[in-house]
Amino acid sequence: MVEAIEHDERWTLMPTLLEHGPGTVRVHVYGSVPDGLSAGAELARKLAAVHGIGRARVVAPRARPA
Image (cartoon, rainbow, N blue to C red; front, side, top):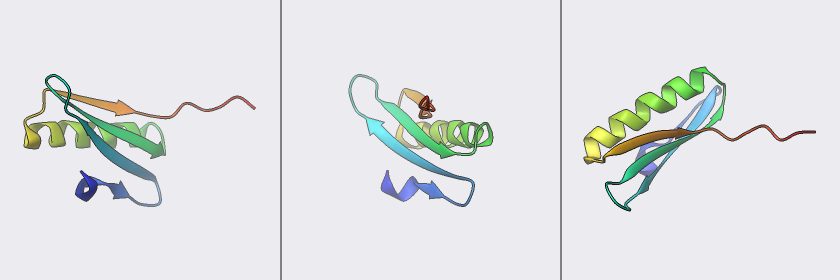
């Protein structure tokens, strides 16, 4: 899924594929939220459909307390 990585000044979207069970496409979102989450969800749905994968998810890192 390296070819599907998206990066610009607003966010980085990094898809991964889990092949266990029906499979899952996960898109890790780094950067602008909530716009990045929407873009990540769209990319996850698109990649799941293209690759015939059963699930699509978006993962955003949590902010760490100071």
